[in-house]
Length: 152
Ligand SMILES: Nc1nc2c(ncn2[C@@H]2O[C@H](COP(=O)(O)OP(=O)(O)OP(=O)(O)O)[C@@H](O)[C@H]2O)c(=O)[nH]1
Image (cartoon, rainbow, N blue to C red; front, top):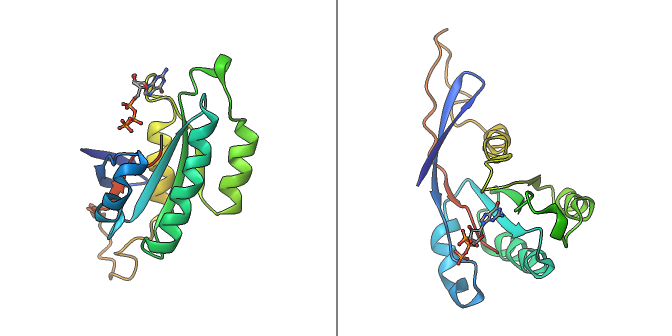
């Protein structure tokens, strides 16, 4: 799937791969994250075990992923705070410790999804940074592949 976000005066188009999070599909993951500019690792705030699994995916990415890959952690289902099992503070502290983007999202209610992609846009260095400026705006068409789900 694709998602286009406006970042400053540029349009950033993301190509997104939703990988299977289950352990039995682990061997397939490198096909997705190889050559990717960013990875969003998603856990479910209502299931503690998905947060533990997430840490294994972070290790996997660190060991075998592109060295400059932007890592984002998304605590999904933030519309279900009544049954929360993972504290936002704990997840944020962990994300900070690995220099990852962190946000709580609700795919159901479209909370923080756009914000997440804008933050990723901000962190991905522009490939056109050294291009001579003609004084005109340009449309950046970066095409990072991005495993949307790698954990829960
Ligand atoms: N309340 C709530 N439910 C959600 C949210 N996001 C997904 N769900 C529900 O959670 C269930 C699992 O969603 P999936 O998108 O299949 O989850 P997944 O992690 O991609 O599953 P796999 O691809 O099998 O690993 C579905 O019933 C969704 O409707 C959310 O933000 N809030």
